Amino acid sequence: MVHGPLGIRYPAAMDETTPRLRSPELMSADDTALLVVDVQARLVPLIARHERLVWNVRRLLDAAAVLGIPAAATEQYPAGLGPTVEPLAGRLPPPPSKLTFSCLGCPELLDAWTQAGRDKLLVAGIEAHVCVQQTVLDLLASGFRVYVAADAVGSRFDEDRQFALRRMEACGATLTTCEAAMFEWCEVAGTDKFKRISALVRETPPAEHA
Image (cartoon, rainbow, N blue to C red; front, side):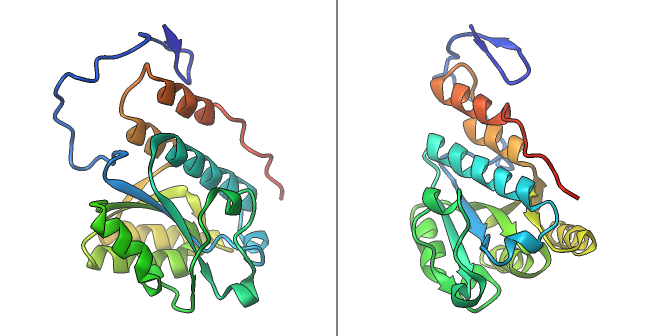
């Protein structure tokens, strides 16, 4: 038996050979990629609850690495806004830079995922009402199924973040959370990967500062 994140005991291994009808609304490790938008050194300190945001993005990157999910980041005008912050940068390939607010300004990322058959994208980053929102709307128009980790996107002001989330959802994006996404990617309990995902879920969040 193994312990889940809430102390629930699971069998040591579950039968992964049993055919299952999985909802097309769900992400999986085989069809999804993770896009981290502009989490950069001169932007991050201005974002409300930025410690929690960076922590959540880092957990998503660690979960993606466990499950073999490709992840990439972008940087908006890094000469002015700085590089991607640690601990994220060390978990990512070198990010392409852009001047467009939308990540469609980095078509090489999207082309690679399309060619690999990854038609679902989980999006995290900043700012929710600018680069994240414009990216999400463009991705939807390009035919991707788009998911937004609501607890891993941020803006300087909460009103901007809230209205951005409402607009993205109204336009067809699916709102989720980091924990929901990690278990959705994992799909099955009782495996070594499940244990590693459960450890990420059990992490203590950083203290928040006023």
